[in-house]
Image 1: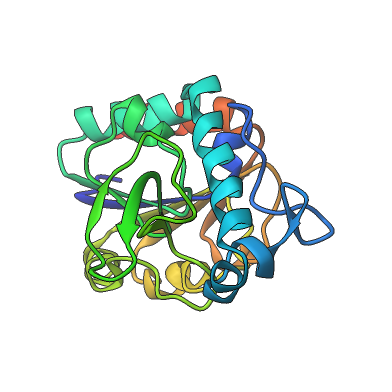
Image 2: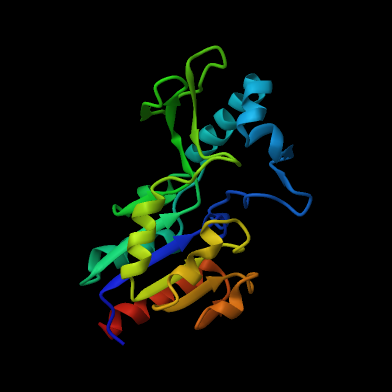
Length: 223
């Protein structure tokens, strides 16, 4: 089948093979911290020093990892596909950008950016942030609205292919994208079946570095 408009959703599973841990472990902790302590506005108000330390460490960690074959395959797809490709990522790392993806919406924010506490100005950030300063991590915390939802919704309405990669499909609103794109062909590429696997037209399970490049090759050969 020939497609004209592709929307791709990626989650932490695509970055796991680059050495970045998935969003939370079985105990509900993120890198050993309770989510309410490091990923909520209330946690930041309560202990900005802890929150800044946490994200400063995550930001520094990005220098120790690099994009893997799955990231590179999606950038290649965007470059070679005859139609439109929108990459929506739940990840706050910069591996998609470093791989070469350009039409990308980091719906949960970016570690490599900072947001002014009073003006909401967003700026690039490559340094450790000072807890006593006027900047916070440019991260969408629990209880906050993900970024560019109207643009994402519009793209999902127009898409004729929706691909979900490396996500458990448990965190909304992203978990509902497959329903919003129900008029399109839908494909899940994941290490194992997600909570929403049965809602997809097709599901392929395995390592992202293996199944994503293979699926991209298949797509480009069909055009």
